[in-house]
Length: 468
Image (tube, rainbow, N blue to C red):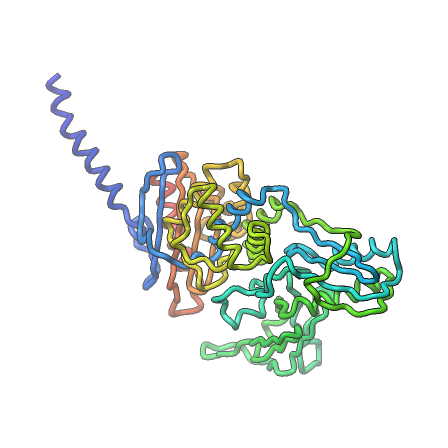
């Protein structure tokens, strides 16, 4: 009996020491002092089963969520619209006119448009009146505030429009023909856009350390693009993606092509009028919401996220969907159905692309917790898996053992910002939820690219995997 009593104080000391150690864990300590210099790190780690916070740093400070914001959009969509919701694009008739009513379907393609007019051809070969484009499902503001102007020509900044075709994006390869002095752009498919490369300089010498040669892109509201600046010949060919600047003009051109393919003669004109209505002739349904959300989360699709946000606003408020009413609806839905209060967050869009968005890791950990505690929503399987799928398939910090297959998480990246949020299963089979927001990462040597952040993440999550 005496022998057991003598050992009790030692056990108490050991327990006290463990508790103190757990309470004073830091992110930099877990990452073995590999936090990139001059960066700001907000982080929270909680036990999924108990909800207990294991590590917290700057958890209540508002930070740019980047694409982690898609988790917010996805959760609200699943709670409100349900899995079987579909975007519907319709052909309608009113007297001699035909109306195409766009719905914001983010996966609607020029092939789908062709199919609608092929269906129309079975009942008529001549349209005596006009064809009207109705885009009243969303308002006219196709980009959120806070987007940098110099990124508007690239496809991850494609406009969020009710009139969406081919993801509002055109892709092609910049190349130079043997013996030619100027490069050309070969588009992946015939598209009604114009690309001018006459001011692009081709540098035939090798790049040097003091070489500031860069391509530059200008675009106008007629879907005309000018590629200027310079590029080294050794870099060619290079793949380029062009975000549409005028979705209505693109739609008009594609409708004209669809009429020709279907063998339908149009007597009138192709016009935009959001007030025109008619009786339904035929329609195209999108993939179900469940499929769209999976694509959005695994591949971080901005257009799907923003169009889903706007359709939530459209359905919830029974008015033209917008960034503003979409955000208001999302906040209401999450508060009423998930008890998640985002009233003190700064939300601007559904994708996280705007630099004006601000969320704290405390707010985001609530969203992550709800997703993982409600598997019936189906969102867990929509998340990328480390070393296996989506945006985590090739993320060097987590795509190799022991972390491969152990993390399900959404990534988020903006200029100087590298984020991650989801679940890690530890060596001891403990499920832990986390949110990471790294901001102000601007390496002095651009050639370093992201490797300091990847080294930090690798150290951090391997430590968490081993320790817990």
